[in-house]
Length: 96
Image 1 (cartoon, rainbow, N blue to C red):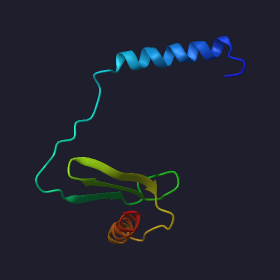
Image 2 (cartoon, rainbow, N blue to C red):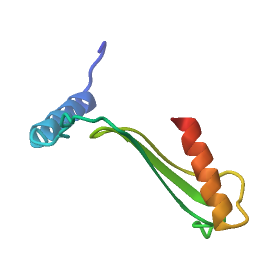
Image 3 (cartoon, one colour):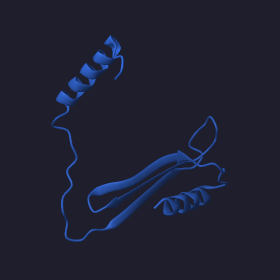
Image 4 (spheres, rainbow, N blue to C red):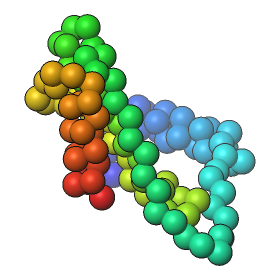
């Protein structure tokens, strides 16, 4: 803000063009009678060939709104798919 340069003006114009092109984008949340907390988990056992680690994924929604999500590699290596699923359930319950 003290010494704006040409590169800053180019960046501002880029942001304004992006906003003008995405005015119709959005997310619609509807009011429902019963608000439920739902959680979904997923994993892939030894899904990465490079480091042989499992990937955990989880998302939580409250009514029609997504309130929390994550996707990360599990640090300890699971010995089987049942253990990997158990680890994902433990991590996701701690995050909520």
